[in-house]
Structure formats: structure tokens, C-alpha cells
Image 1 (tube, rainbow, N blue to C red):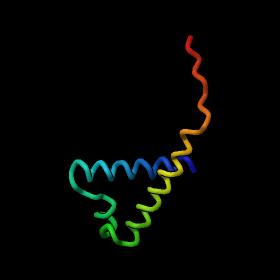
Image 2: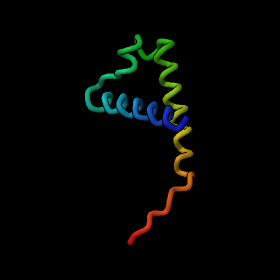
Image 3: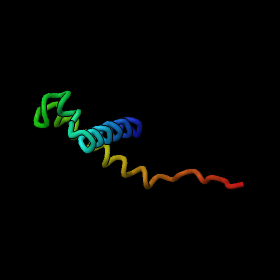
Image 4: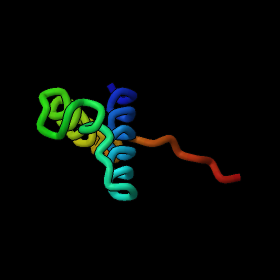
Length: 67
């Protein structure tokens, strides 16, 4: 589940980057506009993946031994 969430968050970041830099919404362009059912499903999955990814902050990380 974590890998899928990370992939979706990366897709969302690339999409937001393309909007910010070029004014192009790649997901909407590929799936028929921002209001198409497929685009809305992808946007929803990316949003849920972002919420899931918040849990990464609360996981124990291994202690790095500084020698």
C-alpha cells in the first residue's frame, strides 16, 4: 500500500509541477478534462494517497549510527 501511495503522490507532484511551470494539467489532458469521471477518480486517488502518506511521518525510522 505504501508503494502505491508513493507512486500516486509522485504522479500528483508531477501534475502540479506541470500546472505551475507550463499551465498544463496532464491528468485532465490525458483523461478528457478536469470534470471527466476518469480524471476525478485519479484526482481522488492522488488525494487519498497524500492523506495516507501523512502516516509516513509517524513511522519509526531506523537509528543511524554515527561512527
